[in-house]
Length: 195
Image (cartoon, rainbow, N blue to C red):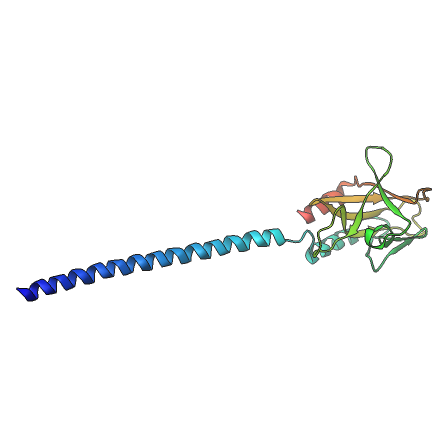
């Protein structure tokens, strides 16, 4: 009889211990799952925050679209290192904050007086204020003067904005005048690429 009682006691103890181990095992698995889920959410939100405003793929799309524009004169791409020389101004270099010269970019809105704006060349490593230039294209040639266009593609506060200039003469205040582009082919194309 003593043996039966000891045997039953041992079985009860084993059963209780086994149940306890399952609880601990389930708790550890639950904690591990929560940690994995938390890390995934953290990584996803981090990648959303780090998503650049402008990528090499978008640059290719913009260049491809502008080069395929159906106009009498083709559009060419200009950068900080490859400028459009125009009436003594190297565009875009001479109108950017980083390489500030005597030229001041200015924006005319609603037919009002031109107001100076801040243009910076886009850099994915640095958050910058004002209009971040991601590209510039122009179809300016000697043959199409004065019927040419200069488009500066910018992102301001996450919004795509195309600036347009067809300035044909200097300004006493050294302003280089822009307006927001109104050509729907250009503006909608850029909006689609950015979005």
